[in-house]
Length: 277
Image (cartoon, rainbow, N blue to C red; front, side):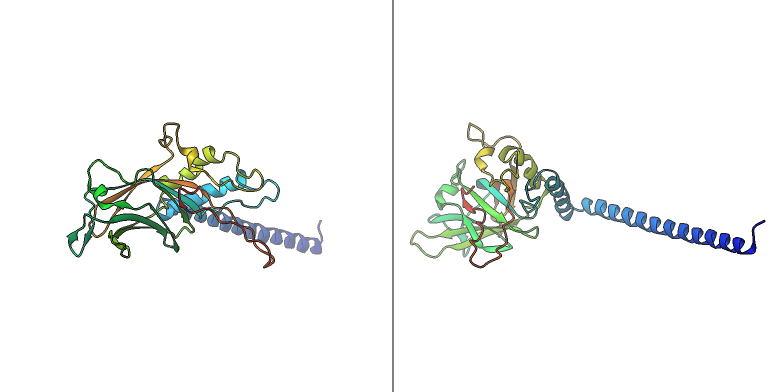
């Protein structure tokens, strides 16, 4: 028969085992609940318009980064998910646009369309100037052939569009209309991954992501390849018609190398401007 000490020792072992089992069960339950809560919160966030599309893009981009888009030698990221080049082409003022100053319609002078991102207001790109009379003519698109690249620098960035008017006498241009457009929409962000197979099928070759060329997205007949662009319509205020734009995601901006010494040559930023690529 077991002695009294053996009985006490056996009871202690059983008690310790019970405590360990209970603690392990609680920890597993907490971890499981935390995991389920995290998954549920992500799934709920994905359903929200706007922020859900940004999160979906971040998750998709992260997956592509860890499986394809990385430097083969250093394993460092070669592009930023929240910074990219927005390419705009086929600009057209539609649905009753007119140049009005102090309530009077203007028929002389020139109009230019300017773009910038809210996070980078001093980097302004613009189309060429076109006569007001050309805009007023039906079935005519004076901005045909114009294309611009805008650097989107953050997931907070909104595209600002300004219609600038300049009189023939060379006076200072003035804003006659404008509008905002959110580039963080799912239909545009998805072009990042579909265009990559055309513009940069092997990113990471040579330790960097190639700067995409929008000409790769144009067919031999001069028209965009099917599915490469999306149309956006910007409401111009005050009550001044619509601006129709063909846009696409022209690739992530590269991650610039940090300068360890002030004498080091700074890394070159992505090109921004009319027809830049």
